[in-house]
Amino acid sequence: MKRSNQLMLEGPLFGSIVAYTVPIILTSILQLLFNAADLVVVGQFCGSVSLAAVGATGSLTSLMVNFFIGLSLGAGVCVAHGLGSREDQEVSRTVHTALPVALVSGLGLTAFGIGLSRTFLGWMGTPENVLPLSAVYMKIYFSGITFTIVYNFAAAILRAAGDTKSPLIFLLIAGVVNVGLNVLFVTAFQMNVAGVALATVISQGISAVLVVWALMRREDACRLYWKRLRVYRQQLRKLIRIGLPAGVQSSLFAISNVLIQSSVNSFGDVFMSGSAASGNIEGFVYTSMNAFSQTAVNFIGQNAGAGKYDRIRKIYGICMGCVTVVGLALGSTVCFFGRQLLAIYISDSAEAVDYGMIRLCCICLPYFLCGLMDVSTGALRGMGSSLEPMVISVLGVCGLRILWIYTVFRLPGLHTPVCLFLSYALSWGVTFLAELVVLRRVYRRGSALHTA
Image (cartoon, rainbow, N blue to C red; front, side):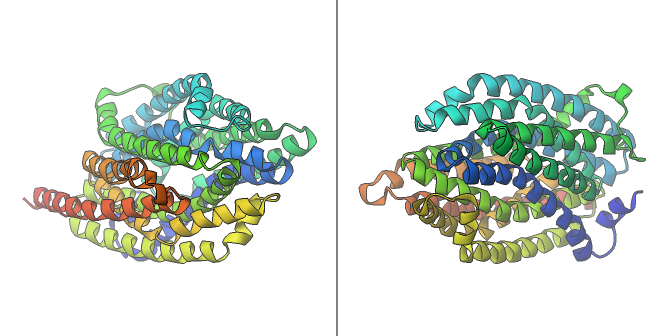
């Protein structure tokens, strides 16, 4: 057994969890830097309208992409279960099923995104002076979305096998390329938002090639052989059973964020610029917390496969403690240095910085609640329960936010940015409490099955 797998199943947990999670945090930050580099270069060299154009695409691209990223999580859980139970054939068939699914998904999403991006942006109420630039960015971005989908599927497999360092190294290489091409295309070739979109596509292509290459070089059941690529029905069914609810949940999350972005758009392009910059900064806090959710999925997944339920309880406790500390520390730090951070993105509007600070304070201070919610979701999925967290999250996060937007936010005295952004903290807290109840039941059921 690979040493990384063995550390998940045996020995002290705290050190193993931290060592496993830190590369995921750094990898996620590098992924965010793709978009941050786009926003910073556009904001500094092209102005706040171009910055708003790129920012306006975020929730919409997430809506289209998140479903397939959820499917990739299903592939990771299947691999983790197979490794924990030492079923090498199960693992190999999952790997060779996951890659064709990723390719087909990516190509379909390319056609869908290019064809309908401008229509969706119009439905979101994107201002007329922003819409053409946003449409250009989205069409180029979706032309290379297959790279993003393949990367996420392959990286999920590597992480399930205990390898979090390779995706980090590959994204570091791609990130350097992305930043360099951003500056070149925007300053030398004057390509505006088209330049940063093209730079993102090229860099994502590099990261996808490298992560697939890493799978081809492995010496365990996760090794990829081109001649074995095919869709195995049993593995596809399991991947869909776990990944489909996760994908639907992520997409519905994105729908609620699209509605919030539409509400943001109603405050005008200056507010959109501040919100876009703030949203990108918040992303660094979120991904640092969400890394512990990914850790919970894979550690608990392998131990569930091995039937080690006492160890699962310890994993959950450590991840919850870590995500609370990280969320409170980073959320407070971002708020304290908010104006300096926003100034990196926004160079021509003090008003946009003021608006960005409103969003930062409303979201980042209670952000640890989102971390607690995500770790609980990860623990449920690691134990093979994906439908229940989907239902809870859809009702608790999406349902509450949509209800808030169409009721409380529409009241004359409460149609304000602060009221809009408070819907986030409310939805995180309610969903987390509901997940605790379900988590206890799922844990007892799984533990009873393995001790019977």
